[in-house]
Length: 296
Image 1 (cartoon, rainbow, N blue to C red):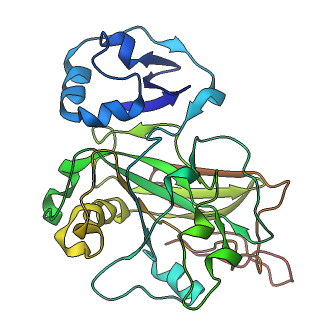
Image 2: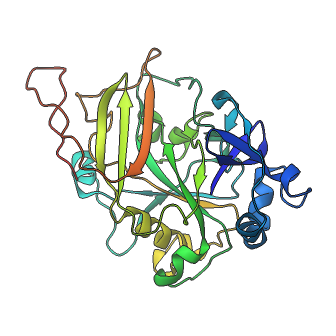
């Protein structure tokens, strides 16, 4: 199933249309999208067994964040060796690099992001939404707690993020609109844990990130729930919390094209799709041109 938020109401996407869950279920589920996670097992059963409901056309501009008010957002950084190398950072051995984006930064899949300075960066993300409370869960059981996955974008004001000694990540990543997600939360009956995924990001129609998340989704679920996750596992993940797997691949604005940051006229687009061999990004040696970024 594909869960969407249309004008603040929970819907199931069906082909080109959408089904209002509250109306279709006689008020059992919704209309608030967060209500689905409070009754997640019952909601999944209803979707599987209640039959076909008519779907109505919808406008893409009415789509909001599929999970609009998670109680917690954990972001997992430095998942890729190439990305860690280009940033000069290294995750601690034995535990993930964890930070947060405040929930006030979350927004829907399309809109205008108001820039906070000259160093706003972009990173395509694979977002894992936790459907059931989880704490000290064995890695093998992590997916039992996952509601689904979706595409996201992690905008960051790098000047703010890297200010101070030591620097702090969360404020520079949490301005309003810096966390677009959607258009839909895709449940695991459509995307199995071992499904190879391809993550891409375009800025002004130029492909700037293109790589594989062959094992990232599974690792993200484990980071969100496993007792081996250190920081994450010491805090209960409520029914609507989520772990954001920072799938930064290689080539972010800080290092791509010698600081290729967003400007007032930039258009950023992100996608997560079933795996296909990625395209190597273009190479040139002249100043201001993209450097080669090999596939992951």
